[in-house]
Amino acid sequence: MKKINEIETLKLKLEEASSKSNKDHLNKKTALHEKGSALSLALRVGVELVSAVAVGTGIGLGADYWFKTGPWLMIIFIVIGIVAGMLNVYRLASGYNYSGGYHKNKKNQETISFPSKSNEGFKD
Amino acid sequence: MSENHSPLAQFEIKTWVPIRLGDFDVSFTNSSAAMVATLVAISFFLIVGMRRASLIPGRWQSIVELTYIFIANLVRETIGPDGRPYFPFIFSLFLFVLFGNLFGMLPYSFTFTSHIIVTFSLAMVVFLGVTVIALAKHKLHFFSFFMPPGVPLYMAPLLIPIEIISYLSRPISLSVRLFANMLAGHTLMKVFAGFIVSLGVFGVAPWLFVVALTGLEIVIAFLQAFVFAILTCLYLNDALHLH
Image (cartoon, chains in turn cyan, blue):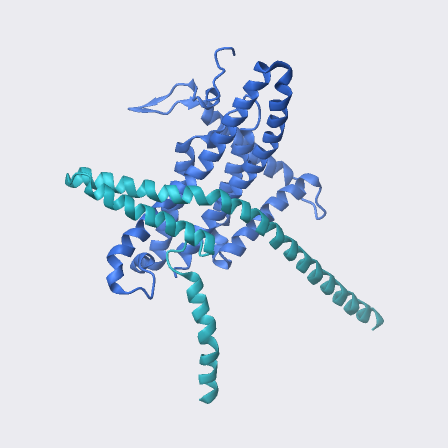
């Protein structure tokens, strides 16, 4: 009987220690992660802005060649490319990352709608 | 050696074994040799490190396990449990880019990641793969990706081209980032190394600079491999969980 008790207490101790080390590990991890991503963020911004303009110009030139419409499509697509590049940088900087949609908005909506839903359930 | 003082000479592709397949030149070059060496080094690193897998890991086994855990955590944090099937791909991609970058730091070696065609091919594999995964998972609903919810319909003609260009710019930004970093870093190192001899006694200054730059280049080698892996994760996350 005594042995089982000892094993139980040992189990509890082990669990406590492992959860503590897990927490420490997680805290350290996030700190490192943030540092690394701050530097990588800085490296990403410039290329992000330029590449969209390059894609826009490429599409414009291709379309002009295809439809034989002078420089007009290229000019339009360069402007769209510049806008897309700025959108890319905005998303990068504001934490939307590359999502085509707006992840953050959706999450906010969910958190807002959650309590009202539970209230409805309560009334029923 | 005397004719090769140009800082760009290090990026030259040299054919070692000429091979022709129809109209295509598929020769074995110094770039291919560097890639083979990278693959051999990765296999050696992983297989020999885990050969005697013990419960209490030695130094080498620890490094292998830490690399594994690092990428596993990255996948878990950015994609979640859905990303588990794609872990092997991201792990191999990360190791390939990392070892390629680090191999380029050895004197007289060749940096294959400093060639846009190599990084662009890697980025296109990621881009096409992600698009196919998204199409297979969400079918035609995938195209709602280009039309964020809650946008008035009259904005669509303006917004959809912008979103499509933003989407198409992904492989370009992914490949140019890695390529430009490696090319610029290695060129800069060679330029400053050239100053050491020509400045005589005062060559100590550029020499110190090159020493510092070597450290920076190794950091960049790790960082760019990490960025490549994390962006692949983010793209996969977008494909698996459309807004």
